[in-house]
Image (cartoon, rainbow, N blue to C red; front, top):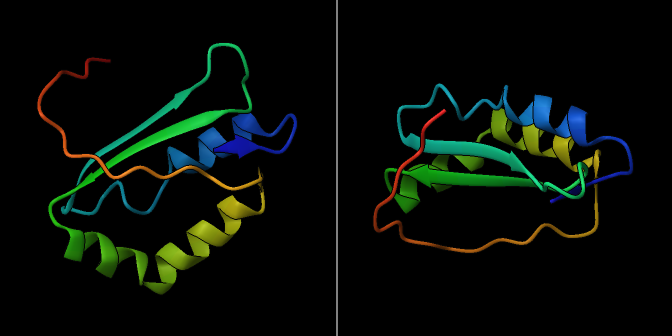
Length: 91
């Protein structure tokens, strides 16, 4: 996703406080940034099931979060559906 110019920090802060983080069915939620453009933000999410993802994003709380996030973005966000096969995350 691309933040409006100069708003990348706000987008990252909002994402790092996302309401999906405490959800048990949200098993991965990673926020990253482009090394060359601080207004380009990447999010990787993993849910226990498609149904859990749909149920959460159908909630009023999630819809309010998306609306507040959308106000800081420009253009359309790219979405890809992926099935993880392995790897590692260390912070």
